[in-house]
Image (cartoon, rainbow, N blue to C red; front, side):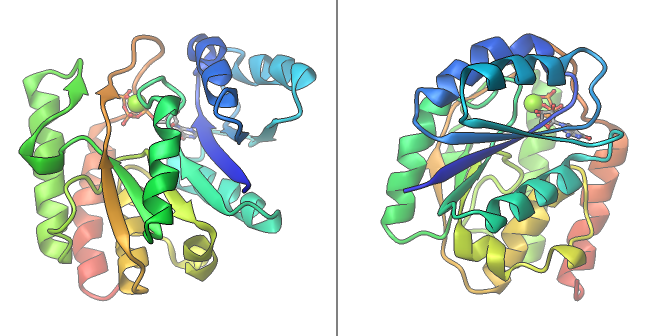
Length: 233
Ligand SMILES: Nc1nc2c(ncn2[C@@H]2O[C@H](COP(=O)(O)OP(=O)(O)OP(=O)(O)O)[C@@H](O)[C@H]2O)c(=O)[nH]1
Ligand SMILES: [Mg+2]
């Protein structure tokens, strides 16, 4: 069974020496999509590539956004024979030890499995202040209500596993969002195609190193995008 973990990076140099061995331990392959980070991220990835053939790297000429980074990664994966394709942040927020639980859930018959911070009314986030937590909870409630996805608790989570056929069925040229809205749009498109979507509980750890790329523009994009999707996207 071939599994690929796609990791978009922008200035994550400080996190990679800790993260990469943890992922490799899971006997999966990695694809980084780096947007010309200025902190030496690509150089660190290349050093690791000299030690193992499990790591791949796409380098883009500028910071072009999370959504397009994932789409490039997905297209690359579909060109090869990976059966399961993951999204994962490269800032140590997502624990690679969770990978086998995603696969088990897929094998129960789910096509897209989301790592949720909010299953069964709980909140499993470490290191967020109240404001960030409220924003995330509100964004989820807003998006799932408008899009008819109330059976899910965390549609903005960036830790997830797609079965290959889900990505094959999605027309990437129609994807409109790039920031945080990208995560919502992908779930919605998979749902509209009739795929079975499930969640597993995860613990999310706020980054310790590097800087956040979250901003008001990304939040506004998501708020509007949800309506665009609902009204016909
Ligand atoms: N290639 C690429 N990667 C990006 C871009 N923006 C963010 N990323 C990466 O996407 C992942 C998630 O971004 P984060 O900055 O952690 O965003 P977040 O998780 O919403 O915010 P914090 O964790 O609070 O900092 C990280 O691995 C980033 O390095 C981008 O424009 N291009
Ligand atoms: Mg993060």
